[in-house]
Length: 635
Image (cartoon, rainbow, N blue to C red; front, side, top):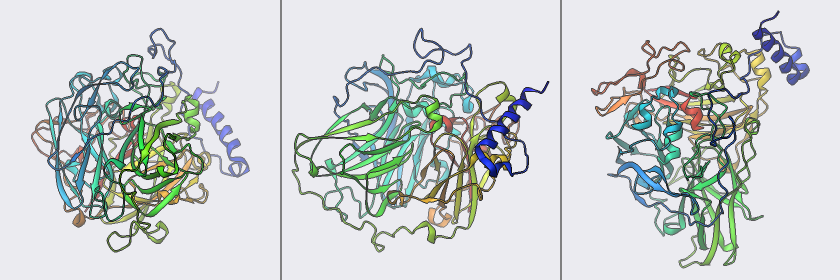
């Protein structure tokens, strides 16, 4: 009798040949890679609803939309700010009970920090979190997570999009517990833009951000001052609105429900969170009263998993995009919709003069689910926030300049086709192809380059160079990829014949790098849309596709620090201890052997395990386990 493994390989090979057609049949016979199993209920799973069957799909209570006013967070100076992460009582909706969450001030989430380009800012973050409000969802074993994280949770704050020195980047392996104080110094040399800060603690980022550890961060300069009368004519003051968008599942008691379904055994929560409640600045389906003038919307997608395609529900009334992740576009661009994944930002203008007093217009999401999310029965989420026109403008209507980058005061952004990269690198978004685990029907992980996070095979880049990254996504899910320290331009996206690609280049055992070139397996790239032609640090990579970007690594001279300097561990911090699966090269051994990727090195000495930066999927469930890699940027 043939073995189960042989049957699985043979069946997959036949299925793959059918998908690839005659071209695939002409290829030499090679073993086909295994595919991840469809998760099935296991006896030790708990239902989401008390009394419900295992694997029951969670649904939030039915809530009336647009009955609560949008909460607009305060804007405070970043330099010298001391933000204490603490428990707060918060109500997502007027018809829900208040629940215990976290915030960096007296309310959920955090204030918007405002910094000046070219200046050094010191920001202090204090851990006074107490017990984790989502303690029952802490997965022991993921990324070094332990039982202690339920009652004494770790945190580390990352300023997403900033060029920060290694010791201030919020490395996921260096964390602070209750009573710890993280002191970050940011030298913001880049131009004005919309950054954001959020927790990045290894293994529990998805829970910490969902519980409230996130906030906006504005960089200002001489053009985008944030004040009325600025040289670019941009809306300011009450007409500049930060919108931090999340989607949640909510329990009847008002608390977040971190899992959509429960088909995964403990320790393997990678299903993602695609909530059925839109939450903006901590309020479910809020309403904002506006006047008949031009508003600037500074949007941060702080969701765990969901990809959004945002637009207005008013036909013929487009959004005007003026910027993205890392600053302004060359000129404003009209777009009917913009597609954004977790971690991405967009800077929009909406002209409410098109509407009459009493009219309403909704910001909606028309994104369709990927194949993988359809399998998981992910709910659609259409309405996000309602704008209600309540009166005429009380100040002169802003006249936005038709050219945002004139080449003199602000350099124009080159087209990617005009830039010659110093090197090309292929990276892969894939499954963990580990036959023994697949054969046992234990859910497999999603990975980068077929490597665990603490692999000894660490990427290296050279400061001051430009790289082309061809990101090959062979999975059935969209993935937002974020690169720390660097900024990049999107070249374009094209369909990847993933089955053929893997048939010709079989995936080796988990822990061995797998990133074969995509030439011959990808369609011609479709250029990035005009609204996405600005500087970015996070990019959405569609399922079964190649996404190509030009990555610009800043030089050490421009940065003013050594990007590869060893990271000292403060006395009140600790290095996360990792062991077993994902700790290194599939063997359970970290960079120093013995199954650990760190230790409690609290004497201030550097630790090799946390040297450098990281790049990762910004689906927070994937980032936590194990879709993240280290990269050393050598001066």
